[in-house]
Image 1 (tube, rainbow, N blue to C red):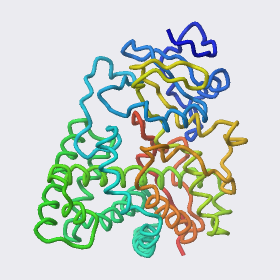
Image 2 (image 1 turned 30 degrees about the vertical axis):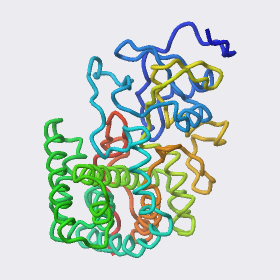
Image 3 (image 1 turned 90 degrees about the horizontal axis):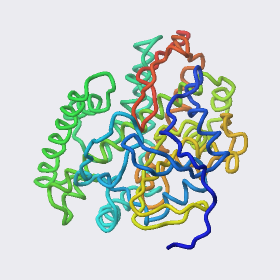
Image 4 (image 1 turned 30 degrees about the horizontal axis):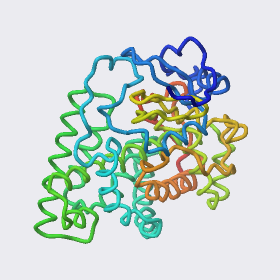
Length: 407
């Protein structure tokens, strides 16, 4: 019998994960999460499949869980907190998917990749980000004065940058963007998405074979020349393409939406582009687009005064942790001058986002450039009509119609 001292838990477990965002407040987490965090930062929760696990809403608890390798990220061990997945058999992560595996495989893959994503190497790509950004702003100006910012800017900028990093030939980039956009689209059916993902994986397999035959100076050629199998290289390539595109595209789209509905913050960034570093961290904290994570205890672990038993899943509410007033004073206010470092939007621990430096470079360029080029940029529809993504684990906008005053 474990004799760890534990904090008393409410006798009735929370019945499921709160997911409904407050009406008219598209950037705020479900209001119930704040009340739960204040009451108990690590709380018993019953999952849709009947599993009795936990919900972490406090910053300290969330950080401790994601830092502790006694909690597993393996998909097949997880119980999912989202309705509609009851009874679903979750297969193990496909080869190369770093988010769903544990050491030692995770360690082996990550060591191979870490040297490719250094701060220095990502900063060397800044000039290409600036050029790609300028090209798309030029195209917006020619097309305008009204566009869907997601299609015209938020999606293509990170798509082309991940192509640069991986070494996708220019002749194939339209094909890649077509498959990638379809794979991340929320407008079609699940079958459409799976078909697009299969097409994207086939595209990567073809690319890996070409790199092995004729290497070039890029990340995929480096991987193809390693001791990884062809399946591993293709799997890692597919993972990197997906991870480096959809999240950053969502941040640019949703981040612009947030700035346009907080005009004083947009004006501050427009007046001082040097604010970009802090602005990116604050937008990441405030929006928390990857809002929910899951870990499963591999052994009994004490966290926040509670004993989590082996086999119990813990849902980590990143959005609640990033709004914890014990870590970020006045957390529900967007303040680009806040020092928001330490937020959990890129994860924490061994699964912290590998491409976070590339994402930062892209956003540090994209937001000020957009606001400076179009000083009268504004929403083309009422804010409440902007269509939001309602993915299980990703928050964003499907479209963002914007307009500006033509010169």
